[in-house]
Amino acid sequence: MNKNIKIIWKNINRRSFVIGIVLGIVDAGISIYMPKVVGNFLSEDFFAKIIKNNYDITLVIVALVLVYIIRGGSSFLIGKTGADATAKLQEKLWTKILSTPPRKIEEYDAGDLVSRLTNDIPVVVKAIVVIVPELLLNTFIVIGSVIFILSISVKLTLIALGIMLFVFGGVIIFNVILERYYNEYQMELGNISGILVQRISKFRIIKAFLAENDEQLLGGKKFNRNSRIAIKITGFLVLQEIIFSSFIVLIVILCITISSADINKGMLSISVLTSFVLYIIQIFGPLSEIIDVLGKIAEFKGVSKRIDDIFELENEVVSSFTQKPYSGSITFKEVSFNYGKNEILKQVSFDVLEGGNYVLLGPSGSGKTTIFNIILKFNSTYRGQVLIDNVELQFISNRDIRNNIAYIPQKSNLFAGTIRENLMYGKNSSANESRLDEILEILQIREFIYNLPKGLDTVINEYGEGLSEGQKQRINIARGFLNSASIILLDEVTANLDTDTENDILSAIKILGKDKTIIMTAHRYDAIKSMDKYIKLDRDGKIECVGETADL
View 1: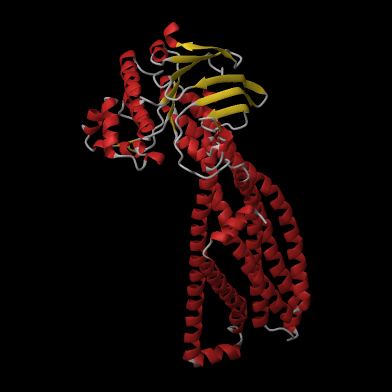
View 2: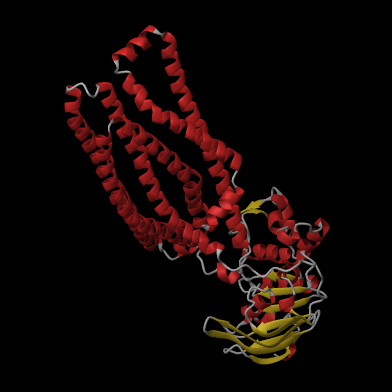
């Protein structure tokens, strides 16, 4: 069974779903009987009886109103079930994404992942929770109607069903083609989402490089490509509808023509023929919806695979979270690491002593950031040994090691929300308010924040609009030091700052990092000299030398 179906079935409100289905079956049963009732209205005896008895008229009206109430109740309950299931499946997929190793998630465009969460999941849920019940109920109506028309005329029924089966076979071929187009459409939609997220996040670069026309052309090209796919899908659906409607008319004309002789002989009444024609039309309605459902199932199969691809990604290895504190000594013993076929680190060995201040040096691509990723257990496929306090890193849980590390990247990684929410993020949620004030004071940003109209509760966007680069980086550094981590990893944290701001921040890091193990990657002289020792990598990812920064 499809994994998505299992997840949805496990999490839906089954009571509402079943009640909705039962009401739908009742509605379908009444619908099956309606053509016979309408046909009876053309019978003189039946019509005369209705005219004479007002009670029967009232009963018919009440029955019709009741039908629509039942139909509405069924639609509401099934729709509610679908909405709940959508939220739960989105939550499951988001949880899966969060439990996946970073290197796997980074293989996808952010916009494409967002598209799978927001666009693909509703399609899958609708197919399972809404469309499948529709398929079952319409099949029930078709079978019931066929039984009624067989009781009227076997000959006419066989002719009508023969034509229907011919049409049905053609539509199945159409749906095979539609499945391919639906899959292509959703893939392109995810691609567009990825490009738009990327472009919007770099909006100022677009403006600064006068690239509006280039981006407009790129966007137009992508939109038009997806539009052409959508037009093909629409064309196939319209052609399918034309063929279907034409055959309805053909069957009705054939039935009337063939049965005219029986009517003239008195073997068949107008009211019975009317019921037969109405049943044929009624069969075509649900049959058309069944075919439409099959088309949506084609769409479901294409979209469902995109969701399954994420669910099938490997999970991060999770072991117990002991909250054990580590003092901060780090040892690499002949560690090698590959990105695909490219060997980034080659038998790297070094020791970082507890409470020491180290700077990683080397040209771009020499493996400095890779060392950070290994320590953070973002990359666990290395060869060799990595020890934290003489404990093999592989035996330390992801949560334990990350709880003991403050990681501060080069770029300011702010989230849309308040400054407080950014600072008290994740493992910092229970941080002491007085400790927060102390850190902000040391970083020389407390006064600025508290002078804002709402202080720490001031809302900022993900780009930190209204804040200088120094202020954004101070907030990032404050977030890193707010947790009582023993290991501080600083990735080019002052690379984008002016000299005065850089020196202020380096001084603050020295104060905040007292008795902590600090490893910094840096290219700028002041940042390098702020650390006590250096580890230098060459271009091939090997250790070139280790020494005191005072000797540089």
